[in-house]
Structures are given as C-alpha cells and as structure tokens.
Length: 392
Image (cartoon, rainbow, N blue to C red; front, side):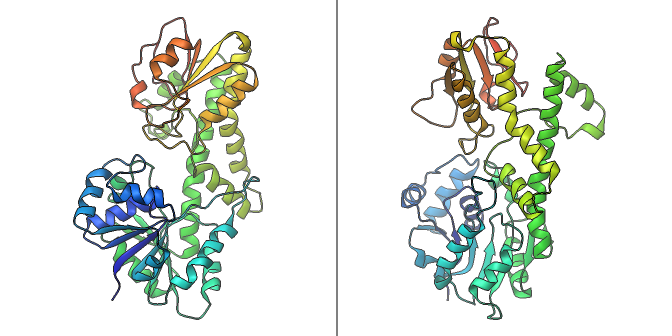
C-alpha cells in the first residue's frame, strides 16, 4: 500500500504547491517533493514562499492534520499512487523550448517510478513530449501517463482550481480514468481530450491571451502617437457594445508563461507563427516605445524616473520576466537615474512609493497594484500610466 495518495514533483512551485494544498484540503494524503530544501523548510513551517491568496489557512490546516508533508528526498516519488510532474519548462536564449532539460529530469525520475503509478504531467509541454516520455520509460511496458495542464492565474490558483474545468488526456484508458477520478475531487467539471488536443489547448490558450494583449498595446501606441487618450477610446469602444467587451487594457504582458508558450507554439510550427512573432515584437517592444516617447521631450541626463511596480502582474510578488526591469535597463542605458518600488516584491534596492514619487520627475506605472489606485501624485510630475489607474 502506498504511503501517499499523491506526490507532486516541483511541489514548492507556483503550480505544484497550490495543487497540493487543494488535494490535501479534500482529505487526500499529499507529499510535496522539491529539491529546494530552503523552500521546503519554509513551507513545512506553515509559511507560503510566495503570494497565493486563500492558501495560508489551508496550509496551516493540512500540516496540522498531517494530510500534507514536505520532502526533499527523491525517494518520496516512489511512495505515492499518483505522481504529478509540475516543474518549469523554460526556453533557451533563442526562445526555443528546452525540451531536453525536461526529459533529462524525467529520465532521472525513472528509477523512482513504477508501473502501478499514474504519472500526471501538469507542466506546459512542447507537443509530442508525452510520447517521448513513454519512450524514455519503455514502450509497451504498461506505463500510465496522463496530461492534465494547469490553466490558473498566478496568485489565484486556490480559487480557480475549484472553479475552472480541468482538461484531462491519457496515454492509456487507465491513465485517463484514474486522472479523472483524481481531479474530480477538486474540479467542478472534467473535459476529456486526446493528448495532442490537450497539449494544444494549453499553448493556444496562452498564445491567444498574449495576442490579445498585443492588439491592445498596438492600439495604445497608435492612439498615443495620434495624441489621443487610449483609455477614453477603449471605454467608448466597450460601453454597451458586447463585441469589444473582452478588450484588455494596455500594459506590460509579462511573466513566465505567455511569451514562452507563444514561442513554443512558433517553434512547433516551424517558426511560421506570424501572429505570435508579431505579438512578441509589440509586447516586448512596449518598454522601448515608452522610453522613445519620453526621450523626445526630456533630457535624460537632467531628470529622475521612477517605476512603480516591478512584479510581472498586479498584487503578486513574482518578478520573473517582468518587463519593468527591461524598461529600467533601457532608461539607464540612456543615462537617466531610475528608481524602483513595489508593494509586494522585495529587493534591497527598492524604495517606498512615497519616496519614489518625491524623487522622480517622471513616474511610470509598471504594474497596476491595487495600492496605486487613487495615489496622489503632484501635478507637476508626469505620470505614464498605460493601465489607467492613476489620475493626477
């Protein structure tokens, strides 16, 4: 008999930890395995290593009732009925997927896996990766692999795991059946697909969001160059007109998923994904657009510029792939003094928003943290606010 119902590999991360908490909260015996001993110690003491709303009370509860244990011992993988792989899948410096890194890690796990287990891939994977995993384990040897991609918004995983449908695909009927049985504990609806469909569901979803952000950011650039307030244009477009109701506000499209998954899709389609490449050029080019607009009006050697918000999205503490840092680097390249501030992310070089406002001649809103809404900024200071949350 297995010691755990579930072992989550990468259980200390943004995908694995909320998932483990959700299962443990439903009374299942969960082991979080992660090779980061420091992070596991933090979690084991009842503290979340990052912002995840609604998670702290659950973590305290499931540690107390011993439904959740943390481990940095890889042997824990062999002691569970279900093994969930929730590790990151990075891209290289050319924005191609580093599939080999993922498969190498899987090869290391192989000796701790057995054919009685259900192996569930939670990570975003390059198409056909699941087939390659079967080859690593041994074709025709009765392995049961399911692909159940995550689709949560970071910071709100606990809420969304109980609200969003779960896509489930299996390499075998048993894998499909058992994965459905598992996720039925936490998901309101199960959607069964083929492996190939599930792989594309995840990539298409993130690429679609990234393209939407690119469209609105391109609109912003056009309106700004034309001397028109884009927020007013957008509000007029949306008011009482359902066809434009989903148009997002302009702003930085960043983080560890949207660009990466768009580029994975491009690589899979022989670099013939024109929409994806155009979206990347627009979204990644937005910091440069802001800088060039300011350079036309200011001598950068004589002003200070502050960036409010260094996380990659609002009201979280994750700075991975945040475009605020890219913006800061470009500004410094042109010789201006730059100050950083954030309400959630911590860094010894960051200053308070009050000090940043006092020291800066130009203030750029990098991310729309809720604390910035209604922020009082002196009229003589220019505010660059793509998000439309500050009025000065």
